[in-house]
Image 1 (cartoon, protein in one colour):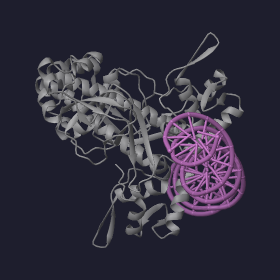
Image 2 (cartoon, chains in turn red, orange, cyan, yellow):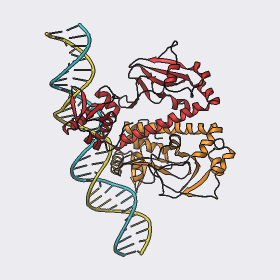
Image 3 (cartoon, rainbow over the protein chains, first blue to last red):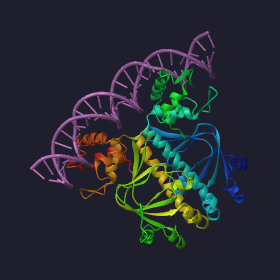
Image 4 (spheres, rainbow over the protein chains, first blue to last red):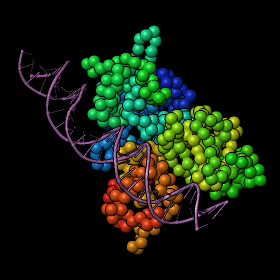
Length: 231
Length: 231
DNA sequence: TGACTCTTAGGACATATGTCCTTTCCAAAA
DNA sequence: TTTTGGAAAGGACATATGTCCTAAGAGTCA
């Protein structure tokens, strides 16, 4: 990650309404970093000295086993804090982080933040609210993953990125750009995702044409998802 | 849950060093509740008005699917906050909670706590630290559950409650009192736990005699656990 | 003592999902 | 146009785990 000294954090602070969280006098202590697609931003076990705020781009958070193989993960878009738990607990990095697209992070040192906390309660509150949201999302996703098979999760996912109106189905932006990434997002293997997609296609719920997925039967999809919504 | 008006929260505040979190002037606002084994303390979807602190006893946190069957959970012992995420996010209860043993909770109303936050930053900090710990534990457990089969998790669990010294293996208190509870703790079915136990017994790693589990080969167990530690 | 219930134990079978491989397809590079 | 590499698609097989069921042993209560 490269620090961009010429860049101004102000733009992002305004865009994400962080004005109250970081008071005027603190702004000069905020750095701006740029990263490129594919960069390994943080590795598990690493010592962290700064708190990062993802303000542009997409990143992937994952865990590697000591055996090196399997991984679990989530994809994150702005606004997202990286290193918040590490800041509070003074732990080493827990999950590895990789850039999926080019992007930008703001950063502030743990030491500066600790000072900020002394005379500016809104920052502590901000951390608290962020963590509560993260915890909730994490718990929700975990439950979904453990309670339902891939088929249900896939249906939920497809629903979450689609909206139906006037006989037409609109797709919002997908969190993933291809099937392999989708498999990772769902926490399964590419092979298995394919299997499930095939089943849904043969059930006339979706249609696959040159790599894209089109929803044919929103109602069946809803039934399959059992009312679950991803994220 | 029954409020015990005669009980004094002071004992617990001292025992768990909560003095700095709840200043003198706030203490009268803290209530003491008692619960009995088997009580359903909170149900998913319920509206919460108070934050609870488990100070005595054991509880079970779980999720029921709308279909009513499967569940996932953790067991919690003091000191544990219940309703912290709900307080911060003002959500309805996410997981259901049931008493595994008799026990005691402290409680304070969301309204009072919101006031406390205004002039007493240490409470916000306490919430933050608690949530960070919870998040970390949750993420750790989730990773373990998703990355490793039951066999590995069981080995980790057995290791976590055992210590080896001078040729003897000591068992610390088990988190669970019987195999069915252990299956729940591990997030698997009783049937499957049994299968895995049988395998470990036939591999001479453990020995089963009238319902109890004795570790025969700590080294093999460690290898099986692959260095993972539960909790 | 007998009826009951809970826990332990495990057989039989089904399903979800992973791993390994092969083939096809398409787009970008040469 | 041909080559090449990644992505898509799926066959074959193995494994982890769930569901349903039966049965035996221990403790409890009438």
